[in-house]
Amino acid sequence: MYRAARTIRSVLPSALAILSLSTMALSQSLANQTEPKVPKLDDIAISPSRLELLMTPGTEKTVVVNLVYTADTGHGQPVRVIAYLGDWGISQRGKVVFYPAGSQANSASSWLVYSPTEVTVESGRVHPIRVTISVPKDATPGDHLAALFVESRPESNKLDDKGKQVHVKFRLGAVFYIMVPNLTKKGSLASLTSEAVESGIAVTPRLENSGNSHIRPTYSIKVFDQRGTTVLETVETESLPVLANSQMEMPVTIEKRLPAGNYSIRYRVRFDGDGPVTEGQADMLVVEKPVQPVAPTMNTATQGTKSVRK
Picture 1 (tube, rainbow, N blue to C red):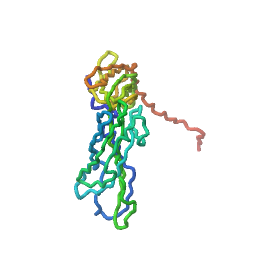
Picture 2: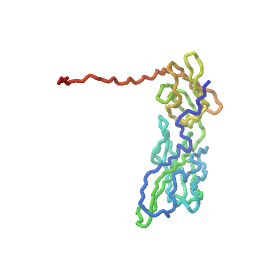
Picture 3: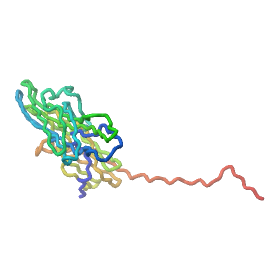
Picture 4: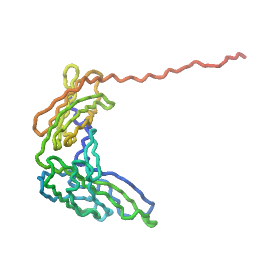
């Protein structure tokens, strides 16, 4: 039996993947080499980047989200950052999306108060942001979502003729699940498809959650040849969360090219920890023999020429 667990690209945004960290703008001028080191994108982190809080209506809780600047003390350039709130979700195709605060039906942004709103992050230090969550007395059961963003704000956009200025703009995010009892989690496997792709096999389950709280499914995949022999098998892997009252179709790519032939795909998913397993089988997968390119034929005939005898 061939195990291909290491070759899976399931595109699973973990907490660090849900956190958005990207270069937005970069400008610099030529100058001397004595300026402080500009922070790299992986020098500054937010922790924790995911908070799941079980809270009853009418209660309040304060948590701390830390900004950590790991550049060597004295060598990193201080960075001014601003904090603000927003909403977030996950699209049907498994993409994390962000929205303005209070724009989504399940938003918890109005429940959050945080301090400070601006801070200068210095290398070698941890900078805490205190976030207080106050759940209204009439809060409905289920998940309510919010995000705390931290974005860099350059001190100045002017370039110094005597020195060098480099401005790196980035955004970090910590996502909040505020879970109000009574919680329900109702996962199901609605459909399953598969196809041969250039790098191997793409298996696409459609997972549905009709409950009011998110689920974190774990899945495994087996591929059988026409004789029923297992030719590929993956270890159990955690999927991207399926949010409340939503569905998700996110392909799982197994990067292993199979010989031409017919195969069957079996997908096993567990929606709740050690709960029961749901199993689905895709339609027959046909892997065709690659078409060999045909070498171009050379036309040696000459046209419009005459033979002249002297």
